[in-house]
Length: 240
Length: 333
Image (cartoon, rainbow over all chains, first blue to last red; front, side):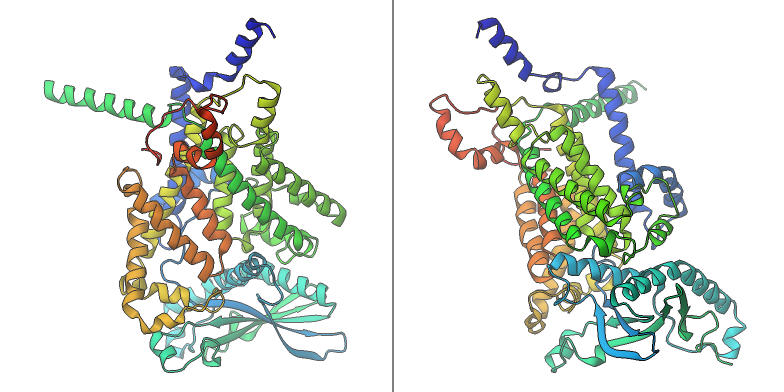
């Protein structure tokens, strides 16, 4: 190899990136960096609850970029408080109409392995909770039903049901197909966390008193989802 | 007036100089190369698990239907994914295999320029298809894939580099690169934003003030992978762990930039994230947060550890040599 070739090959190793950038390039890069970092900050700043009108307005400007680059996150890990976890219990019925009452639930550590797969299923049940939630654990009296709060609750329930129905149909359809059944009933289960004192007094983490559940509704093979009574807009929590 | 003008000029000059020094100085891509291997391995594993149950998550009758996923993003065209086009099981299987091959190549650093772009496309495509099954791991995977794509992540510790060396015996050193510095800086700043908002979000919760929050995390049966509820007998320990976690998260974005406090901040990250990994069953999340923290480890230290064998050859004048800045072991601000 001639010495000239050697020199040119060595020169190849050094690129324009290894020396100072020209001013216009630095200016352009600076603008892009500033825009990007603004988007990175705006996303958690505007993540509810709560968030200001200002932050949400600014976030709308950045939304296309945040979505495209998958940067639309709040980073509120275990905030504001580490809460109870949520599971989905389900029951199945074949074409004979008989309900199989076997206890089925997801996520299930023995079934969903490795741990990352289990966590995917846990996130789905948490998503159901975050989209649909639990209705208030009390009945609205006649007097309360006349108050504006009651109409607000009905609007809230209606909005949640509208958002939740495609999700419920999706999960119901998946379970119906893999179990080859006619109907699927879904339940939202909440598993509360005992206090240290309760545990020291002998309560187990799996004690039945730590669980509560609500029937979400029923999916049928006609691709129809029916909300259970407590999730309907006129539910038993509304006194008659 | 003169005083104000002088102050303004000095301020502008100082900001400009610090800005240029922070973002636009060439840096050894060793740290970026190490992050590529670690993040690439995690991306590979993440997608291997997606592939294990691909039909259930991406198939025609998936847990989360396309209709719902689209509704989740308000039908926004910016929530793009190539899975909208994938319907047949055969194409789905092929897409998964291709994704794994690309991520494997990316991890070992082969054709890194192309595979880093493809790795980002793959990562975002998967997560946009299953918005209800995601958690912190996916967020950090996404941002690392983005920044590794922007920087020369295959310039160090890669097959690309090995091949270049083989083809060119004179190729003894890796040039420091401004793009490598920009990519590392973006990861660093992003990690600060993450911890700051994670900490500020916790300030709204009373359990982070009364010191019981860690109990809520450790005694959660569905998360628990190691039973540490014996801590119920040690309430003050729970208090200390809770307050330390919150203080660490809130102060990270300040203390990590100073060379004297940086080692303490990074060392504390290890038990915090390994604790999440081991006790709460989120091994992947705990590890990927530590990968993000690697951005604060200087290339000098990375080379001191990884190139130990080679550095012994430096004395013979036969080893790869890095012409970057030396001295400080943790990347300076």
